[in-house]
Image 1 (spheres, rainbow, N blue to C red):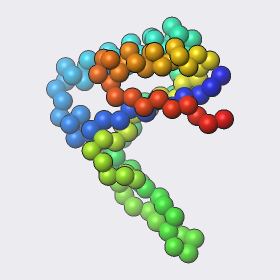
Image 2 (image 1 turned 90 degrees about the horizontal axis):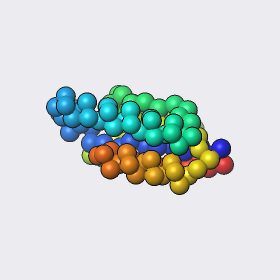
Image 3 (image 1 turned 135 degrees about the horizontal axis):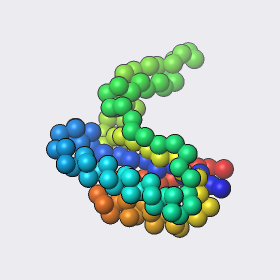
Length: 116
């Protein structure tokens, strides 16, 4: 089986301001995605939301072999990765179709196969 990482980018500031009914709709969309994965024989290894990017720690190479540690995300952009799924699958085409249905319900997705 191949492994795929499904990244969920979103504009954090806007997402936090959405009304409860929009969050509930999103939750139902994720639940449907889980059912679609199961129906397609895909294995959801792990997934979940991430804490806000302002709680991230970026660690980069510094000088003289030391690490440069800063608070906040690696990149400062309007969209940050807010969640992820790690999925195992033997059927990339069906997994992609499930992701397309998920995106069609309003979700932003980046699907990437893990290098072997």
